[in-house]
Image 1 (tube, rainbow, N blue to C red):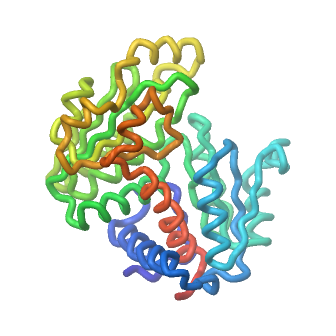
Image 2 (image 1 turned 60 degrees about the horizontal axis):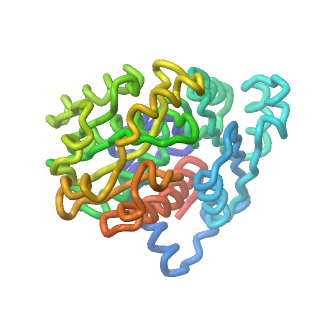
Length: 330
């Protein structure tokens, strides 16, 4: 287990070695055990403070980070641009320079295309305390780590030969960022799984993320493929991760986005498609789910679904991450 992660930023899984990521998951498992049996562990980050800067609203992300800090004995402070001087143009150097004098870590959720991850790296360059990504325009590393932890719980630590499917689905409401599918293709190709990415034309991911996935697959002797057939993608899948994202590489104009999405309303995770996957396959989604559009209720609430296990593991992974990087001691 790596024990020298104090102060290390977590902006993308690409910046962490496999050994470091395993250390996070190992500790997450121990903290999950303590949580399950009601064993106090509020000494780990006692009297420490995490500043959470949200450029977008959240349910799971805010509550899992805030609950996690409380359970570790620390305190999380919720910030938004409009409630701080960030909204009035204060730069990352001044924001970070002040916050690091008050606390022990800064986490940021910023999905602005072309801005979010760059802002986090800029902020990190100005501070000595860890900067943690709560999601950006490129990656969602905490979600991907919770997903990997969940998969290892269901299938064991050796995932070689498993087929991981990340498929686009239709959703009518808003343009969702590319960060979740990009996080998944970059991480799962490092863990011995054959990864299939499925989406209609126009919903491509960022080239640099696809290049990373290809490189990881080549390094690990696994397969990474991109297809435009949802049925073919589901065939013999072990892990089915079906969710919506926007055609951000082409447009973010609402009317154009809706027109593109409306051409593919049949891209839904339903019972027929789940039958194409392996008998003991699992269905995953980071949530929120547009029920009836992204997936049917029968799939979301069915025997393959592990969405609530997945959501819970956000808590445990993030607690481990904060403990390792913000100076906790077991």
